[in-house]
Every structure is written in C-alpha cells, then in structure tokens.
Length: 302
Figure (cartoon, helix red, strand yellow):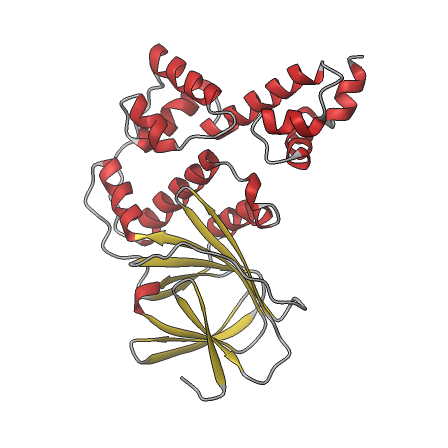
C-alpha cells in the first residue's frame, strides 16, 4: 500500500484514501433479510457518515457506478488500475481483495452476494453450485439490467426503515439468479409454469395478512406452501398477477383506507397499525398506489 494513503474499513472491505485531501467518505448502509448493500460516496458530500454492516466472508461485491471515476484495486499483490465509466458494474471477490485505493471522486451502490446465498439459489433450482462470477476475481461489465436493479434500491438509502423484508428477498433472488446465470455457470431449468393451488394461495395470503406489521420472508412463505423459493415466487405471480411484496403493499393500503374512515385516528397511528415505518412512508406508498394522499382521500369520504 502506498505510504500516502490512510486505510479505513467498510465492513470487511479495506479502502485506501489520500492522507492530504478535503474529500470525505460517506457510507450509508441497507440491510434487510438477505439484502446487504451500501451507498458509497467519496468526494461529493461535505460531511462523513457511518453505517453498521453485518460481517460477511466468501462473497462478491456487485458495484454499480454513478459517475466516471478511477480507482486502484489491489488483489493478490497485483494492482488493477483503470478508468471506469458511469453505469458500469464490477464483480469484486471480497475475500481476495487487499484494498481499494480511491484516487478520484466516486459514487457506487455495492450489493453483497454471498456464496452461501449462491449455493442456496442453486439448491433451490436443484442444479449444481455456481463456481465463479465473471472472467476474474475483478470483472467489469456494462449491463443495463444491473443498473436498473441498483436504481430500484437506491431510494431506500434515504429511508432504510421503509424497506420490506419481502421486497428485499424478492430483489436478492432476482439479482442472484440473473447474475449467477449471466456471469456464472448457473444451469437454468425450464421454469415451473403453473400457479398456486387454492389452498396454497389462501395460506400464503392469510399468512401475509397476519404479517402486515412485522413482515415475513419469501423463503418462509415458500416453505409453508411446500415449494422452493423461486418456484413459489413464480407461482404466486402467475396466480395473482403480482409479486408477493406487491400484494402485501396493497393489503396495507386497503387496511389504511378502512382506518381512514375513522376521522379520530391519526395518520401516524394508521401508518404504524398498517405496517408502515412512519406517516411519510404511508403517504408515499398510498399516493403511488391510489393516486392521492391519505389526507386528501379521507376528505373525499366525509
């Protein structure tokens, strides 16, 4: 490591920063169910921020760049130095990393894909385990699908308490299967085309209905229905026309509408009763699904 750098650590990733600089490193964390992600911003914010992350081993960091930048990646004693363009994505094997040296301003969303989860995906699909991602331990690609996935979770860094475990699971299964099949050696079988049986659909909906406040994971729902996780997600969408987390959001909004008929109940209390993190979370979701705010909707029924 160059002597003019100071080393900081974000979770298990060592980052080298210039000693004499006014640039700040700001890191925001996002962790829910299987989702572990970080918004890493260097040189664009005036103050530093800290984030708590679970520790992980044997994992890839999948990073999508929000700006042109240059950084030095040191792996196994070898330095990889090259400019990167906005929108590019890297696959970085964290356990093989010595350190990353930030030399220019940088903004990335990094999502951790653990090998244990990659094995879970393969087991769920009943295919052999994935042996690699990309062409090397540090692989860079330009992939619009990965950019769109990063943009889907980026707003949650402003309000991490609003992310639902069911959405986090859905996101990670989508990301994991896509990455392992596109950049790894995941063998894909023909998808199961049928929907849920009557009892499976009823059970899944009843369980989600009782989990409106606390939330529930995708794997747990699949297990209750006697299905593999990916099989359940596909079958539920085929039966209902929407993903499980979308169905749950609509039930929360339906419950909020019922409570809005009682004028004495505050919006803050309704939000918590319906599984939203706070009143603003209720307002954003309600407005997106209904087309108006809870307050405005309440005014129309009285």
